[in-house]
Picture 1 (cartoon, one colour):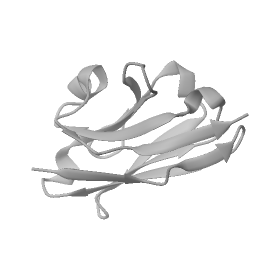
Picture 2 (cartoon, helix red, strand yellow; picture 1 turned 60 degrees about the vertical axis):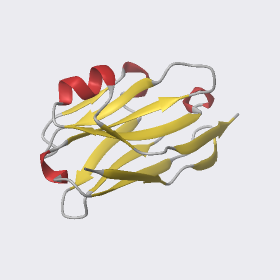
Picture 3 (cartoon, rainbow, N blue to C red; picture 1 turned 180 degrees about the horizontal axis):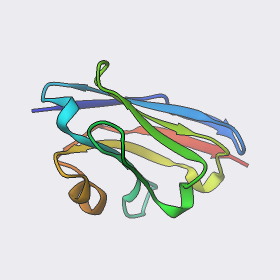
Picture 4 (cartoon, rainbow, N blue to C red; picture 1 turned 135 degrees about the horizontal axis):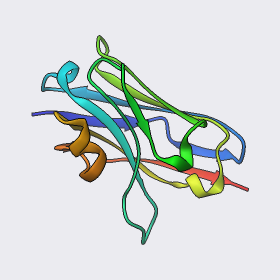
Length: 123
């Protein structure tokens, strides 16, 4: 079993940057695909980015492509989301998720989820 804890959220002005981190405990982190979803109040949870077990493959939703970058450090059992050129529409709770299959993760989310970290982007 895996536990995931997100950090790094906060309040930032439009055009600014944040770096989210998701630390994992338990499970075999290095064999899991990892990803990020986000959810605004009253909205459906939305896929943001995913990364395979060794970081050789990444996927992004179109709205963040070129602005966000997902990465991982298997030695630290941590996945990151570097968020640049932030827009007010990026405001959401960001959730970290893990799954053995990156395809399943991207479509539905993973087997494991963190509690989320709030990102608020002001105009």
